[in-house]
Image (cartoon, rainbow, N blue to C red; front, side):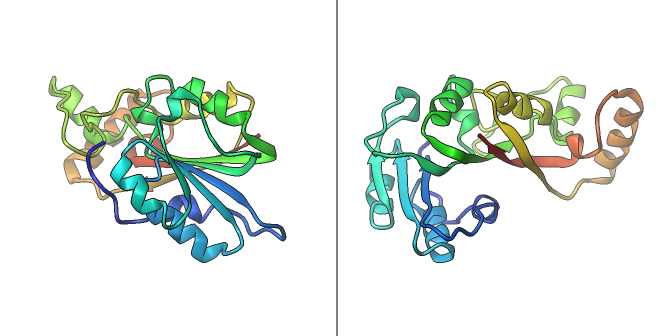
Length: 212
């Protein structure tokens, strides 16, 4: 990951509930700390932590939270105590073993702690459109970002959390505008598909809130 993100992920922060006691929140892959800053504004009493593989980004985020440089797949965190929330903003798809990381993070959560994650949807109609033309072209960003290692559909991301003992409380799709050709293709695919809903083709990515 060689780019910096200046925009917070509002989809992550909005699912953090107000609390009468200070929250402990860890963001995995916190980048420059934009999302942590957004959380700090909404939850000023919270204690914020981050782990970021990019040293330069981590140094900047360190002005907002307690941030360490590292790779979550090494399963080493220098922070004491449990977390109420662990956040993954478009990170799981970049990991070699996301299920192992989810399992590790479950052990770092408080009794009713939550993981909130953004995950791109490989079943989006734009990808299906490519496949029907014999293509699967990687790009510098987006659904087929060349740095993506794992791909998820709605079913796979729910299974990822439920298989590790989580209860998926929310799975929120984010939609993008479709072309007329994509709308027509989706209608045809819905006629052929079983056990699917339209959002499984329409969603560009999902935001998941899973509770321990």
